[in-house]
Structure formats: C-alpha cells, structure tokens
Image (cartoon, rainbow, N blue to C red; front, side, top):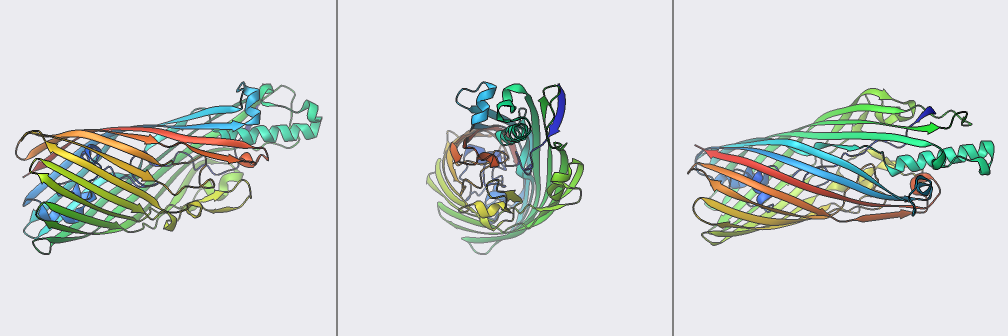
Length: 453
C-alpha cells in the first residue's frame, strides 16, 4: 500500500471547549464549595473571591486562604451518519466517534485580607478550558470529505464502475487539542454600610491552546488520483492575553444575602506559533497569524437564606454574552463562506442554579445543588470539530471543620448532557445527505482546604 497524505480543508477548531461547568469559554467551578453546591453567587465565605467578591466584606477580620484540587474527566461522542460509512461495515451508515478529555490535576488558590471596612482579595485558577481531548480515530467531517473526494476523482478518471469506495482503501486519522486559560484576579471590596458592600477588580487571562492532527488514506498499489492530493498536517500552538474588568455588589439583611457580579467582555487575540502547517491552512494557522479569542462577558446574581441556624438554601442565575464575544471564523461548508462563529448563536448562555446546605453538627456540613445550562446553539454553530450541548449538573459533598479556623471540603460533580441532532442534505460539503448526533459525559472530583488566621 502507498500512503497519500490528506487533511481536511476546514479549520482545526476541534476539542477546544471547556471541560468544566459554565459558559462556552468560562469555568465557574473554581472552588470545591461550588462542586458541593453550585448556587454560590451569594456566598459569604472565601470562595466568594470568585463567585461574589462584594460579599467578602462580611468575612471576619484577618487572612483567609484556600487551596483546591479538582480532577475532571469527559467524553465527547458523535454518531455520524453518511452513506459511504456502509462500505466500512456500518450497516445503517452510522459510525461512532468518541473523544476523551481529561484534566487530572486542576489547582486553584484564593486569598483575602480583611480589616475594618476594606478587603483585598486575589486568586489564581484555570478560568477556561483546562484539559486535553483526543480523537484517536478522527472525525466524521474528516472521513466523509476524503471519501467523497476520492470517489469523485477516481470516478472521473476511471469511470463510475471503477470508482474507489471506502472498502477498497483505508483511512488513518487522529487529532488532539488542548486549551488552558489561566486567570489571576485582584480586587478590593468596601463595606459601604451595615447592609451594603461593593467590589471592583480585574482578572488577567493568559491563553494557551495547542492543536495537532493528520489524516491519510492507504490507497491500493498502482492507484493514482487525477490531481495531486495535498500533503497536509498541522502542529500549532496559540497564545494570548487579555484583561477582564469586574464589579460587584452585595446586600445583607438578617438571614438574607443577595450578591451580584458583572464580568465584562475580555478582548483577546491569540497568535500562532506553528511547527507544521500546509499551504491550505496557512491563512488561519500560519506562523504569526492572529485569531479572535474573546472571553464573553458574564452577569451573575444570587441569593441565600438561612431557614434555620443549621439549614440554608440558595439560588442563582448566570447570563453569558456569547454573541458579543469575537470568535474565530467558521467555514460554512454548504455555502463556502466564513464568518465569526459567534454570529451563528441564537443568544447567550443561560444558567439557573439552586442548592441547600445542612449542618449535621458543629463539625460536619453536607450540601447538594443543581445547575441547568442552556446554550443558544444552532445547526450552523455545531460541528464535530467543536461542540457544546445543553445540560444539567448535580453536585454534592461535605465540609468538615478540622478546627475553628480550618475547613476541609470534598465533593463530586456530575453533568448529564442533552443529545443534539443536526441533519443536512449537504453533509460536510459532500452534496450527500448526512446527520450528526452530539453528546458528552462529564464528572469532576474535588478536595480543598480553607484556613484563616
């Protein structure tokens, strides 16, 4: 067999979505308290450094520190239906593609110092992405385009009766992508009155993305194609940074607390550092090329209420302004045009959260909560290269007071994703009908330690 290397002509924006909870590019689970109960938007504990920074005004005076370690594991599954897949032994033309993403160690750190009416706080966390995803057997969009191309060219050269179908050659492809957005946050909280507090700060974000992939066909001996197939591979890193302005307010009255926060849009571009890139891909992935990579603005509001001295309930709402954030251009295979991917969204992301916490005794707390995430996705936004589906998540765990000033948190967070079906009469630009069904699985484990002095 001789190998004729091929690679799809679409951009390799695969496996770049977040492995955590939150919006398309935002991780909201930056503390184990979130995994125990995701409705933390009115928190008055150290995790409020991220979730409700104005609420830090109601901490006790002194230093407050927290170190957290999470482990996240995710699968991304696509059932792709295309007529030529039948030649590979898939009777109904449906082939399963599965990618695995993992982030075994995800650290985060929060700190605050309060004295009187002022609190200074900071944190370091992976605020977006956070894992590596690999598709060992490629993707349907890759395979279908190659199959259609080989059939069309060999039919033109040797006649339809001698055209090559996928049972007469092999396709070998693989792709890997990883994305990390590191965030360092700093800000100040001021207690305006007995009931009101305000916060202002910023987060510096550093993005590191890495993409690599290949695809080649094993052609029968003696077979040549009428036109030379492009020898294409990609090995590209992307880096960039941007600032996120943040403001927040908090209102506390007796057993009720309400917190609100606004994170503004982060204007950000990433620049390519490319080791391998074909001519066909150089427009997007050539060395030195810049690509939009904004982090969407986010508004959050939440409330907590102490029903009993040992029983508390909480709720929250998040809105991500995804359509206002510039994203990389996406190629529409049906029309051949490219546009910013955010324009294919119908709206921003909506999240609804609720939870409960109960003190078993002075030493042990237990909590649980739920989060519903609803994306404004459309068929044109969804590709097997990079996709999200709406979901609901359940978190549960415990807090253990090791001493008056030290607390251990442990938690488990599980997400159930919807299935999203995309059908088209022009599957990946092949002019044949096809269908993709997208879904995911996700689970996160975490342990953290809070300490104050």
